Amino acid sequence: MKIEFVTSAEAAEVLAVLVHEGRAFVGMGTHLDTATGGSLTKAMSHSRFTGGTNSTLVVAAPAGVNAASIVLTGAGEADKFDDLALEAAAGAAYHAVKMSGATSLTIDAYYLTAEQAGRAAFAARLAAYRFLKYRTTLKPAKTPSIETIRVVAADVAAAQAAYDALSPVAEAVEFARDLVAEPANVLYPVEFAKRVKGLEKLGLEVEILGEKELEKLGFRTLLAVGQGSRRESQVAIMKWNGGTKGDQPIAFVGKGVTFDTGGISLKPADGMEEMKWDMGGSAAVTGLMHALAGRKAKVNAVGVIGLVENMPDGNAQRPGDVVESLSGQTVEVLNTDAEGRLVLADCLWYTQERFKPKFMLDLATLTGAMIIALGLEYAGVFSNSDELADNFLAAAPKVGENAWRMPIPTFYERHIDTPIADVKNTGNGRAGGSITAALFLQRFTNGTPWAHIDIAPVAWVKDSRNPTVPDGAVGWGVRTLDRMVADSYEG
Ligand code: BES
Ligand code: MN
Ligand code: ZN
Image (cartoon, rainbow, N blue to C red):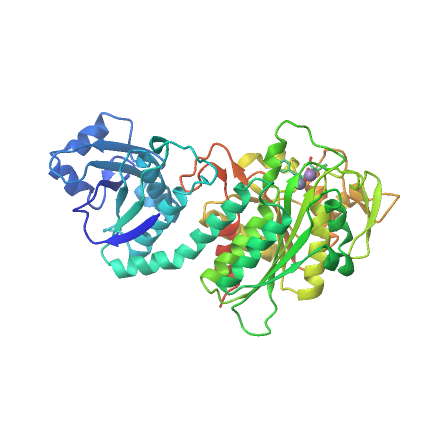
């Protein structure tokens, strides 16, 4: 998508103007309505469009103006107009005309601040994301036609600067979405690691550990998950040193199961294809590191992602196996489909031991139970630190990602006890499955301030109501993490 900032809407092909609830024009709207002899008002009064968020009205071929069409896009209640309402308005305008045949969309932000003008472009760009890599016979008529987003701004240079500050985050979200969308025959652990290594061009330091090194280090629970796969397991470590030299880093850990068949505890066939996105946590961590490097964040951060494929071959681990984790704690593997926690156990232990971070925050598509608990539009937050949880929960709603704190009571610990080993990888049947999973992870944090985000509900969306998040791979977490770092850990 080409993004441009201009001072005039004169040459616009499709012109989008924001309208507040109550059919209230702002910016150029009033002038355009007059110029078209009241066509916009007339069109609105004959439609259900009132200016609510996520609603649009396209007025075609209006007389009296150059534009081929005008898109009225809902900005919601004027007194509740915030960044998210602006993003929704810009995103919805894009969706209203993306298939129209027009090649450019011009958005009126002349009356808004430069920051808002930049953000409108950012939002339209996120809305326009599509994963079309494998659509080799897509007819032009079914392909989005908009190639350029132009934003009309009073101060073009300032708007461009505002956009330039947001653009690394958009790029990072796109990178994460691409990872999540890739099928598992293309994106297996070594390929994922290769793409992470490619981020060295942004100034990240990247280390890749293969199976030989992981065996030597003692990542036995992670390797146990990968041992049923022909694909070699990997751990990728990313470092961004933008803060004060020697300052303790903040650390992010991701579950990167590039495909989860369940292993010997095989999943049912129905819907198994969704498990290609069981690496959404790793994609979020990688996306965050991409964003931090892209905008040269003033912070020291590390990202550690565990990349494995959970397959059921003759060498696969069995239910009942006991494995000694890197931490030294022994784990009874009662269900090979509860593999994410096995991967994270070693990654968390390694991260705290090697980096002594200020905190560790992990993201994982960890449990189906999270979807049962919260539905498909909230991630669950589990933490031993109120400060860390609060910082995450403050950032999420600012960028349109929903998260909800969950309890990790000590009196549930007994549900992951077993007479056979130090801990087992399942809980008390299906009861509180997301909580027992979090309690399992906590045993590998060694008392480090830690938060675990279960993103199973939100990593993939099928019926999006957020214009800046098209159906498919969400890249969930990249924006929240970036915002949390910016608001709470930089400087
Ligand atoms: N990757 C799945 C969790 C998942 C399920 C994410 C559905 C998104 C949608 C995870 O590895 C898993 O299989 N968890 C099991 C745990 C159980 C065996 C204790 C689950 O949720 O059923
Ligand atoms: Mn599983
Ligand atoms: Zn899984």
